[in-house]
Length: 634
Image (cartoon, rainbow, N blue to C red; front, side, top):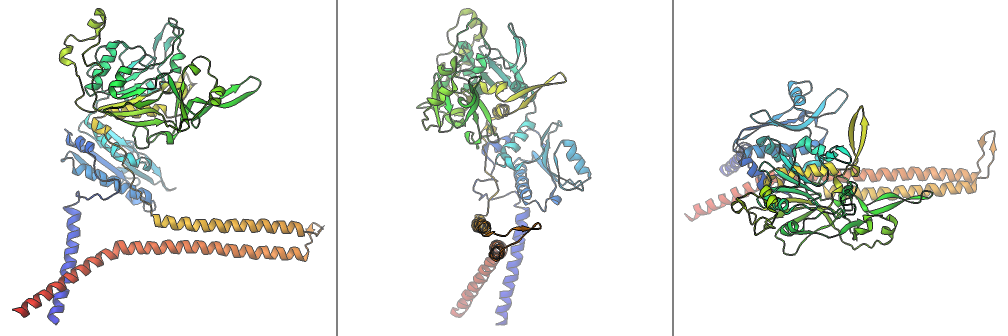
């Protein structure tokens, strides 16, 4: 018997040792191996990220600065920092040694903190002692190029993988991306015979800060090879050779951002003496048809819910009225899952068109900007010359349809010019079309194309999103909307590789305790009911006091009747009783949550090891019984 007990204890000891050894082994040998059971697969790298990592040609160093010693009382930062660090460890583990990770805790007044400041990381003050929280990243390549994330904002957690992959991609490709501009609007400035020198629009100035913006003009037969992204703005009456150049650029795998408009108010503000009566619309139906989309011809989107107020009426009796042609698009009008729009709050558009997919399209259209369902399509001629906001509002009839005003397009396409370059005059053809076009012509795309289409050009105009102010001889643009960031985001996405474009939002690691929240909501409901009952009793008592008050002021003091004294006494007793009820509700809430917390801790800490231990004991006992039976039979 004693031998059996000794064997049982030996089994328990060996099981405990194996349990500890297994945990130690998993923390070392299997450190970079994980099974991702999260709902949104937060810790599984996308195929695009894996491709970017596999194509790295030089070693990259990633320094993760995280003040872990200062965030004991900031659980949200601690939880998010754990996810960021684990993601960076996954990047390093799957980079074939090309990414090395350094985790640095920049303690206050240390050389590590000086290094964080030198890299441009943002330190958040925590206390009066001067301690600063650092939670950012600085990545470098072998030529000392730097990509910095000053602070990991939890608002961008859904785009964490994109931000990390983009930083590594930019380090692997450090040269500035080139944006080629084809525009019939003076977006990049220039010279006009009527107005003289034209300043670049604010959006063009922002683009030039981040990209190499090159104006290609409007007459060309091929897009230069160095162009990374093609930006086409208001393609009004473009030569067919230029449309052919755009077509071949896209079919060959080039990424493009295209702005069209059923009525460009920005263009209407630039009169053309040669053509005083013009429609100021732009569309490229042949290209759109090849891409599987269409622009509603001659119609703009009116929206009652998103309409901006304008001044209307007479001079003597002005009034503010909703102008359904001018829209302020809020977050609910933007795709939260798309990187171009996911973090924006307000975009202003004017007389925007509607984009829709055509039947049989081989491309997938993902809306970026959409109207509400309180919208309709309106004939552009109603605002072409003398718009009447009041009449537009009176005649408005919502269709219940949400119209798409900007979209991301991806998928295989065929050329809009299947037979080769279009017919041009001999002079134009010699100037634009290469002689060996038969050898270079592409009939259909080999890979899915990546396009962003916007059915409004006024979204780019200064008056829609910035206020220009003069100070000390300089002009400053103060943003009032996110039109500029939308364009920059779109170019940034398109300027990356197709792997970057494929990345989408991945959800967040924050998982609320729904049972706890239900308890809190239940207690808050009871609290509100008690609070409302208290307020009702206070009002009732005050009314009784007003009715029963018959005493008169004597020497500045109020002489109260016995009835009044009884009412006041009753009120005080009710107040004490109600306060006790409130305390009981709050105490019950704390007790429920504490009990739930203890249960969760027991399940996480004690129950699983106990189950493993019990399983080991049961297995041991079963084996002993089998051995005894075998001995008896023998």
